[in-house]
Image (cartoon, rainbow, N blue to C red; front, top):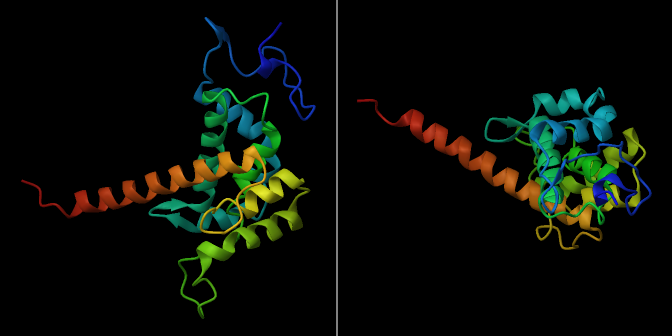
Length: 194
């Protein structure tokens, strides 16, 4: 019998033969970066190529990382987490990728000066992102809930699906890395050179 990733997933999805990983000593080897990218693009191509992603490409998220770059990082890390924890029988891979790509689909730069509308961005943007995602794409309950709850516990309701928890973790880890990497590079730039 082939590894779970090569079979039919819980949600009836099927991946091509040869699948996402290679068989190793006790199952499969971990996915390569190239294979993770292929999965993200397979399930998220329409999102990545959508005209509104141009806004995300111009909007800063954490440090010097755009919202588009951040969302792509979260999608890659979400797939990597599912792979490392061997959750292939338990996640809807398509929904996981799409939720990760759309979790910050709020379509504005929250750093821009305004009349205070973005003041509570951390609390409100999941709902804006979900509304925008519904307007531009057909999203299922898993994607919708994962977008809406990706800021838990900042937003009070936890994710209902495993995919939402994975996106939540990937988003948090990415945000921490992006924020601290940016601050450390600025700190290094300020140090006097001998």
